[in-house]
Image (cartoon, rainbow, N blue to C red; front, side, top):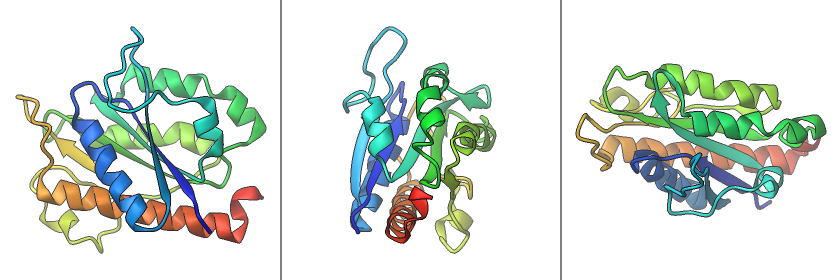
Length: 195
């Protein structure tokens, strides 16, 4: 049964966008449809290369990958503002029992990636989503010298803002996309997402 997985991101300098595109590749490889959407900046700028997300995109998805850069251990204010405006979706229970995961990027190895991923999960838990990460069965989690966590894909751009993902970061993002698609397909075909 075909599933539609929304890859939703806010990206200021392109690192989170790069992760989003690799995750979309994994989603497609697993047999689901990847829909990439961005969150606009407060000045209505569209820093990403994809259309702005709509409430319809959110309600129509069977799974969701959500990405934001790290801002002092938290998601960007633009990403938080998006979730703050989803009470209508929450009241309708539109995201209950749908698969979800998170991804992020920071400029330093200890820039708050894992703290951010955990905080990004909170709105999804309130919406009743089924969260997943990356298991240590993925060898890149053991090998990476840059981004990559069991909580979700990450990138470390360095102080110079390098948007080029390492090989390990790319592989983890693709594996995450595949796993999210497989879970989305499974939940949809079982009818669990409608309970």
